[in-house]
Image (cartoon, rainbow, N blue to C red; front, side, top):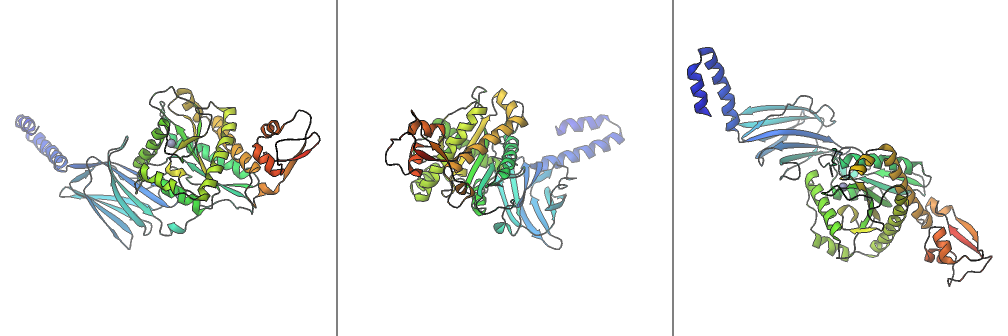
Amino acid sequence: MYQRIVLVIARLPVFSVLFAIALSSVFSVSTFAANTIDGIRLWPAPENTRIVFDVKEQPDYKFFTLSKPNRLVIDFSDTKNTVSLRNLAVNDPRVKLFRASMSQGKTRLVLELAKSYQLTVFPLAPAGQYGHRLVIDLYDENRSKQIIAKPKQSAGDIIIGIDAGHGGEDPGSIGGKGTYEKKVTLAIAKKLQRVINQEKGMKAVMIRSGDYYVDLNRRTSLARDNHVDFLVSIHADAFHTPGPNGASVWVVTKSRAESELSRWLVNREKKSELLGGGGGVIKNTADSHLALALADMSKEHSLGVSFGVANNVIKELKKITKMHKRTPQNGNFAVLKSSDIPSILVETGFISNHDEEKNLTWSTHQQRLANAIHQGIKNHFLSHPLTGSYFASIGYKSHKVRSGESLSVLAKRYNISMSKLKSVNQLKSNALRIGQTLKIPRTG
Ligand SMILES: [Zn+2]
């Protein structure tokens, strides 16, 4: 390459020679710096801002902070920045300005900050569509005390945590037409939030409310901090062929026997953590099985509630969309693994399927999905109300037994289990007599 430039210079007049020398010096700088910064993304979130640098090679960096004014300085050695820094921080509340300077092959980036923050800096190895990255999280200093702003809740409300899957760096699955799962999940989550908050006796808490990534462990701790009674995680499925379609509902598995599909999904969750840039690594599967084996009675209870809601949500989803699976599926998801909060994960459809990708971006269909999830959750908590909740206080319908009606017929008609029907009516056997009045839990 150099030789050829020299040859060209030899044939050109002086003016062009100077120009060529200037060019070749730019050239030598770029070949001198082994690494390049090829992209910078900012993801402002309620409790942190994540800054991601795409770098060509594994980054060699140092950083320090300065005060008065607050600054973060990062030195990338042997690196050239190719990204325009103008307007980069324009929508971020924590970073005011980026500045860069270069000397001796080293790029120094100075971030002017609004105040001082807790800092996490870590490199990420290539994953999915990303190459090497350097991630910086600026956390608000009062983060641990932060509770997600939620609507005024009255006594007796059950709190539903809504976890929109993926976000920020992690797009989730990507459809054939370029639909990002993270957008679909957030849109459905927001619609679900609205219908839940319109329902007397229910209140929604959003675990993710914008386009940013929340670590999987943080998702469950946010749910816990916000006293969530039930957590619903919303996703859209994908497969490497466009054929599979339909929705499915997942609960955390208790058994060692996992289906092929379950393993596939759990692996995707791990991938998501790599894409999203989780600071911690998800425990390996053996560990999580052990943790589950050690689970206590509250886990048993929580599993029961999870299955109950899962069945009710499936019943509602069936009415408005194809089902991939018509029974609750077992999966060992980190986001479902917090033993004290009953939870489900809803795969709302396959984004890798042509028709469903279209449907999942359609507001009316998103609303139907949200309504079905809401109705399923509500039906469960009406027939199995939490002690002290509003749903527990609204009582029962009564039913007078007619000829030909058995306990199983009535259980089916009123959408509750036979054992529940027996227990609320204190029946010792399955026998009913004509004219007998039964209490029927309201299922809305
Ligand atoms: Zn997902």
